[in-house]
Length: 235
Image (cartoon, rainbow, N blue to C red; front, side, top):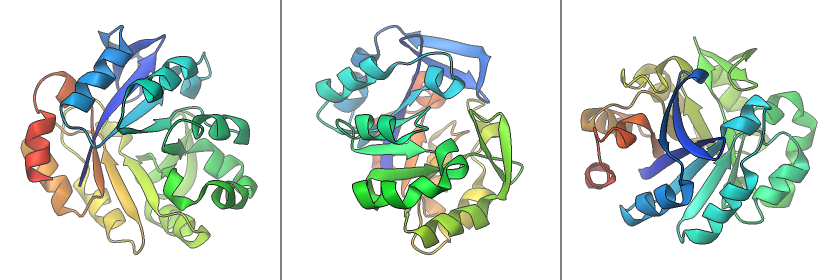
C-alpha cells in the first residue's frame, strides 16, 4: 500500500480543511516546499498536492506546485481545478499523475483523448463521495452518480486508478468509511487510493485490509497522531 501525504495549498500556505469547508481551516505552514521535503525525507512514496484555490475557483498555486515538483525526488500527483486539457498537460509536464474529478463528469468527451495522450498510469479519477453519490466542483455539486457504478464505468473506459474521498469524514479524524472503501476495492481492475477520516494506526491497517492501493495521510499526520514511518511499517 502506497503511503501518500497530502499537501493542501491555499494562498500559498499548507492548510487542512474540515469536510472541504474553507471557513473551517487550519494553517500548518507557510513553506510548502519545506513540508514537501519533510514528508519526502520521512519516507513517503509519493505526494498528493491539492490546489484548493483552483478547486474553489478563487486563485492558483500552480507555480508553487511546480517548484515542489522540481525540489523533491519522489513522484507527485496533483489535484484541484484540473478542468481543461491545457492545465492537465501543464501539470503532467512535471508531475507523475494528474487527478481529475469535475472534468471527468462535465467534459466526458475529452476522456478518450486524455487517456490516449497520457496513458492510464498518469491519470487518477477523483471519485469524492457524499452519501454514496459522487460529488464535484469542490464537493459543492452532486453528480447523482452512485459511487460504485461510477467507478465501474470509468474502468470500462480504460482508467484504473481512483482517489476515493469520503467527504463527511475528510479532516474529521473520525475514521475512514470502510464500507464504501471495501466495495470500491472489490471492483475488478480498479486501484483505489483511500482518503478521509484516518486518525490512527489502526485506521491505516483497516484501510490496508480493505485492499486499498494507497492511503492519503492528512490531518492525523500534521497533528502528529501518526507518522509515515509507522504507516510504512504496516503498508
